[in-house]
Amino acid sequence: MRDKALKIIGEKLSEVLSKSGYNKVKAENNDTSILFAKESTGSGFAVNFEESKNQFELLSCEVENGRVSEDSENKVLSTWLFDPQSDTEREAKDIAADFAETVRGATGKAGSKKVAKKKKKGEDEDSASSLFLMNRIANIFPELKESLQQEKESYENFRGVTFAREKALPLVKEVLTSEEPKDKFKKLCTVFSNLYDSGDLDTKAIITIVFLNAIDDTTARENIGAAVSKELQIAMKEAFKLKGKKIKPEKIKKKSTFISDTLSAAQAQQAQQRK
Image 1: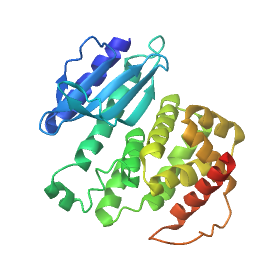
Image 2: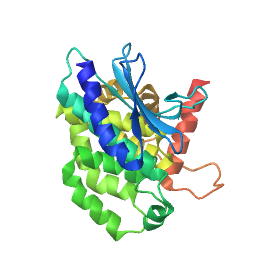
Image 3: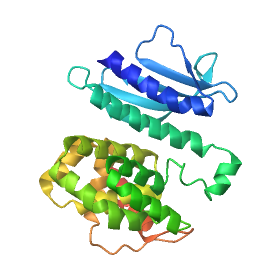
Image 4: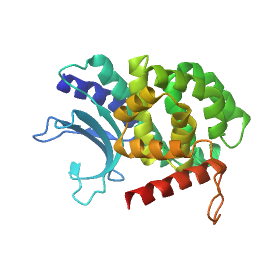
């Protein structure tokens, strides 16, 4: 099933990346990886299957002579668990769809100046933004897509926290609390783990303070903790300690928001605990 999954993922990424000038590179003596390269820039994307972890990884990288450059600073964009012994084509297609959405954001972020001007600051393509997070959640809950489109058309600056609380939270909370449907629970935990790692401060705060802090049930929080990344496990615990507390930032050196200040306090407490 691993090889079939690689084929499904490769075909989906080819469909998306070919539109941005990326071509699939034939891997030499490697049947657990896929590599795409853009000759004009030397940039690329790689998909690796880590057998020891039963995990697919999507990375951005630099490509030289048809291989990942030795000097490349690879960045993990997304990860998905996949057990070839029990998972099926359905899980493989879910991973393919997630990776395709991620590379759309990554390639759009470095898009043309014309596109960037049209979309103000390119926020729609910025894979670190709260809008990117909401786009990913809307893929899990299609019923959010109309509201999300209305939000984008109605406000010059996307109101990530407001949209998360008013529109997305009821759907997210129900799935996280009940762990049903299981496929949506798994997708949410994966999206949260990936975007907590790569997202900006407001994205991290929406994940921990808006979504995860809304889950009070102890069993549900334990189930979530077992399904997310280790970094997010720690962050959600520290953020939950601050639930209901009024946070006063140390100093405001630059423009900030209440939610980013709250997350900063949680991260400071987390760092102190590690000492």
